[in-house]
Length: 139
Image (cartoon, rainbow, N blue to C red; front, side, top):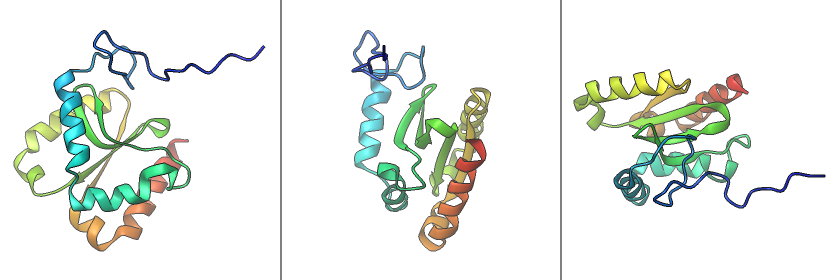
């Protein structure tokens, strides 16, 4: 007998939000912030998202503005444990925050790929190749 596909792919927390990281309680303030970030993506994030969404990059499924351990990742591919950060000028000012965040994500067994805004604007093909290669190395 086949196991039925669950209607809810991610368990619901008491507040009714789904967790992609099982066993981690999602802060509703972070959920709201992630929604805002999805609505206010940078031009570079929008460009990259057009190539990642709907499994367009070699069939890999990406999420945008994904909450992981209290941090919001620009893009996340669960199947390959890959977090992609598109770094703009703000990241120059928050080096300590980024270092702590990287430490936490790496401790979860996730891999990080940092891409500069300029790379997305001027070298998109190379960026997509780097992402594809990183995803393929994990699977």
